[in-house]
Length: 319
Image (cartoon, rainbow, N blue to C red; front, side):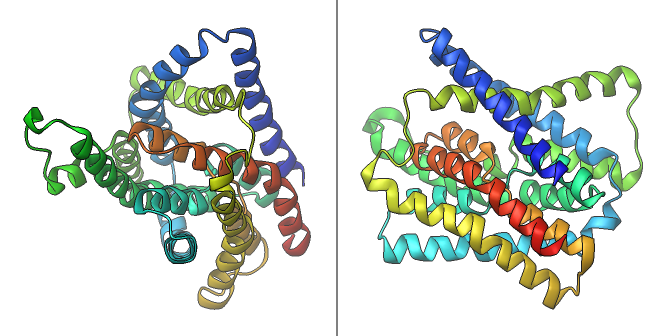
């Protein structure tokens, strides 16, 4: 229980700093958000992923934990996408954003203390990071880039020149900074390579800045916003939050228990990671590709508010 409370407490304090900054500096908030987004996307997030993975024992997580995370995320996002597309009849771009928000968990900051304090191992959280940043994120970023490309093409003047090809769009999205940093960290872990202290220490400092900056930026975006205030998105937010906090942990439990025969504390770690709220990175990715962020912001906020009782319930049932 202590790890769950600590993880959520850290997040709430940093988001609160962002809200306070937006209240005290209302005329500067827009400029700060505009400046922080590329800094986090291109510099601090890749550094964080590199340092997290560079010293990880990959064999411990690739055999069981990572496949579980991939299957759970794929099944969860597929359920959301089908319901959004065919039951709610939402357009493709909105469905894609909601699908990522329903399956992309906040492993980077909430997941780490929960894994270390509640489970006693970093394996569950590292497996989720590997699955998300090497597979899930590139897939969704490719989809985001495609829809962002279509919107740009539609809005562009006929004389603006030919739009980039789909192959270039896919390549640019797969070779994004976050995935590149993750892949580099995994390479160092697999080959036991090390960096000299003069390089490792600055990378570590940059990586450690990523989570606080991201949470503060998210907090800035909350001022003046009300969850579920946009009536047209209420069904989408409820669907995304229910799928994220109720369906995904059940899928993760079933896959881990019945397919991979995971039990005990290891099973608690797998399900606890699935019960985490939506990651703020989905908000960052949506903003980076010019897609609608209101739905993502509301799912992040609602899932963050409800994830604590959901996580406590998981700990009570499986702990």
